[in-house]
Length: 340
Image (cartoon, rainbow, N blue to C red; front, side):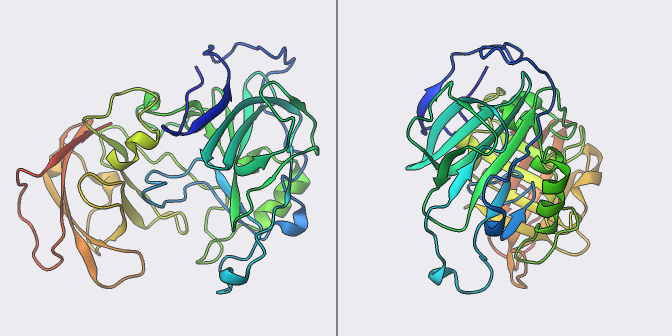
C-alpha cells in the first residue's frame, strides 16, 4: 500500500492501495534502476548532503534522502544567494507514481522505474502536464526548483532492500523502510561526481553515503516512538514526529552519539552527550537507570539531562530535566514511555 508520509499534506494524486509487487504500469523489469542523468545541471551541484541528516522537529529520525544544494549555503552570504528556479530533470525513465504538496507550493513526486525501484524529488515544482501516470524519459525536464534556497531532496527506494537497523519495520513508509542512498544507483560517472561534492557545514563527512538505520534489538540505540503512537506504517509520518526520539549518531563523523528529540518530553532538541556517558549501543535492561548530560552540538553550556531506562527489550521510560546544574536521580510523574 502507498501511504502519505506527511499527515496534513495535500495529496494531488495517488494510486489506490495496491500490493507492493503489483504492476499497474506494465513495467517490464524488476530490480534496481540506473539514474543516468543528474537531476539538476552539474554546474549547479554545489554540495550534496548524505543520508542521515538530523534536524528536529522536521527530521527527528535520520533522513532517508539526500539533499542537493544548488548554492553555497556556508559562505556567510546566504542572504545574497540566487534562489531563482532551476530546471529539474528526470534522473531515469519511468512513470510518475505519486504526487503531493508537502509545504505549499513545494511538491513531492515519485517516479517508478521498475516493478520494484522508485526515486523521488521533494521541494520542487512540477511542470504543467506532469500528472499521475505520466511517462517520463531520462533527461526530460519535469519540474523546477521551488524558488527558494538552498536545496531540494532526492531519495531512492527499492522493495526488498532490508534495513536491519529499523527494528520495527512496520513503523515506516515504504520509502524509508526500503531506503537506499541515490549514490548506489547513479551511473558510475555521475556517482563519482556526486561523491566528490558531498560535504556538510563541518566539511567532508566520513561516510559519503550515509546511514539511517542504527537500531539493535534489545539495545537503546535506534528509533523510539511514544507509547501513544500506533504500531503501523503511519507512525513515522509528520503527525508522530513530536512523539519520536532517536538515539543515533552524528552524520558528519558517524561516531559521536546524538539524541534527537521531536517534542512531547521537551521542545525539539538535537543534543550530543557528555564525556563518559554510555554509548546507547551498549545500553540494555541490565543497565537500569541511565543519565545523559545533554549539550547542543558545538556548545559548552549544558542543555539539560535525559533520564532513560530500558524497562523491557522493546520499551523505555524517559524524562527530560531542563536544569543543567542539578543531576537528576530518579523519574517523576512526568516520565513518558516509548517503544519500538
